[in-house]
Amino acid sequence: MTAAETILVFVAAPLAVVLLLALLTIGPAARNRRPRYKPGQPWTHEPVWYEPHPEATGHGSGHGDGETAAIGSSVYGERHGADAAATHAVSGGPSADGASAARAPRPAGPLGGARGTW
Amino acid sequence: MTRALEVESHDTATHSTLPARTDEGIDQIFSFRELARIDEALTMSSRETGLRFTLYVGDLGTPTRARAEELHAYSGGNTAEAVLIAVSPGQRVVEVVTGSAAARRLPDRACALAVLSMTTAFAGGDLVGGIVNGLRQLSDQAGRPSHRHH
Image (cartoon, rainbow over all chains, first blue to last red; front, side, top):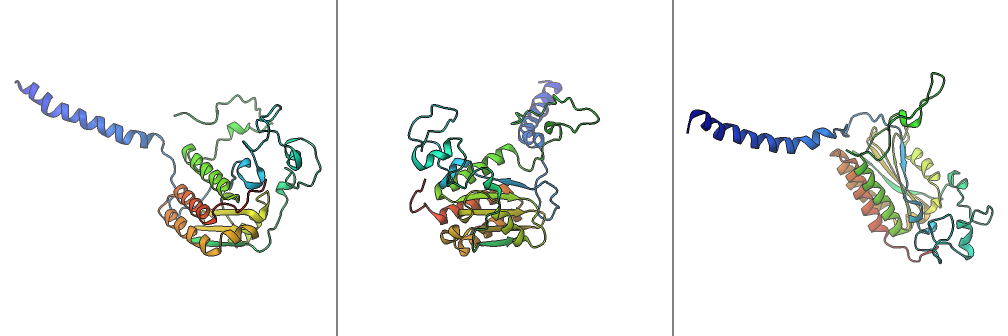
């Protein structure tokens, strides 16, 4: 074994393996680098409000709740009876959950809850 | 990496018009993976309990409680059954507001416990993990609705 071969096997090869592993480890983290939240730093983002999907709430009944498979403009089942107003585009009716009424302030009586600081 | 939103500009803006929404840049607080976790947690806890969980992330002003209660009134749907989790990372405050009907199933003590686990995660810099765990605790505590009303 010549000196060049020795260096190739005992230095270059391990170095290549180490570099490959390092690249695989550090690479993905370095690529999607985002400003991670650290406690104490100022918060400069716009306020955002996340809501559940509309059909998820108890009163918004959705997928699978319809009595018939939809034949119409909606992907949701067509409902009948008192609920029908929700699927048909008729205005009026007792339901106050319309899109316009949804954003009017509706104070909900005595409120509960908790606060935490960190 | 694939992006959820097409942000390539097809804009025809001139000097006298505003740039299109796609050109304003997206205010990325969370990655899309984190957004998916939040979305799933909100949707599943709302579906399981019949309550309406919403999450606010942003500044809450000086009396944080007053602002959070004001936001709760605007949370849409039947606010008596709404639960608002308001996180203000800049002020290091998290407020949980429950409507009158929700408060019967989520006593203040249970909310405080969920808040405690959330603040522990927030103090470690893990916003999404804290939010998801807090939602899980709240929905576990609230349980299933006694009757499904459609």
